[in-house]
Image (tube, rainbow, N blue to C red; front, side, top):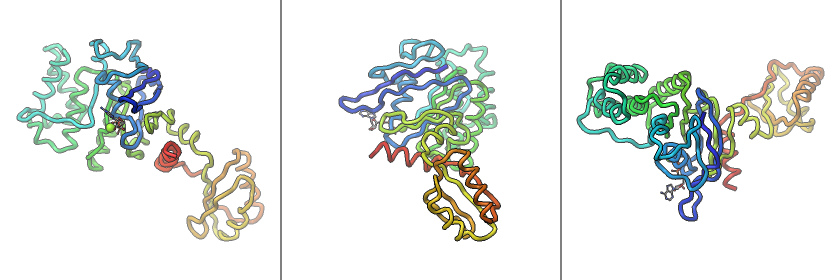
Length: 309
Ligand SMILES: Nc1ncnc2c1ncn2[C@@H]1O[C@H](COP(=O)(O)OP(=O)(O)O)[C@@H](O)[C@H]1O
Ligand SMILES: [Mg+2]
């Protein structure tokens, strides 16, 4: 379990990370979302023991995350936002070097290297030079390197940046697999839809503050004051729009199509059912009546705009 407790980082007067707390269980994948300069890298570096918090602390499986504690450091895999690959080194040599650094016993190294190569789909590049790999493969190699010591916490700082859609989707698969292996994974991004489909929880950070934390669904719900309801009719779209105007809990009616409307609804589910009943009773030929899933991108824009104002 990862317990982050009131982490703070100040640079002089500037508060880069402010009182950030959250908890993650094995198998959870946290999408760590925030715009540039929000404090993602700073938080991740503190969790990676590369940066000393100004105050607060984090614990991994009961041990304080501290740069002097080698045991806890061995449980952490960190993939930085920028990484360099050494010249003239082969894929397996690169992994062998990191396995050695992390103290993987000699007799286990070959097996471990084959395992991480298989996991990252790089087995066929074992003898290739690291520099010759595509950007997506280099990214996976960097991730492979973070796995040689079988860490229980993985910190991936913007791993999808600079990847094409195909490489992104391969990376997503891989991150999902790491979660299924029971690891705790934190993945940062400023691009939201990237994270929504495989994250089990999201944390939204802005100006150093963790504005929201929880399941995608809960965060969306707690941050969405009104939900969007969409109605599709066979006909009479314009009349329905007029009819809806001024009804309780309904506002902002707009047309998606001439016979398809969308509006903000602030009532309870009972009110929503009642509205449908009356709508049908009035003779409107309703084909569809549904809640629109709040879009994570919209939500993010709303939340961060709130923080900036
Ligand atoms: N060493 C530093 N000294 C002063 N300010 C810093 C330092 N490192 C980061 N910052 C500031 O802290 C804030 C958060 O940065 P960072 O964690 O890198 O954001 P993100 O990764 O979300 O883009 C930014 O405003 C950045 O300019
Ligand atoms: Mg960053």
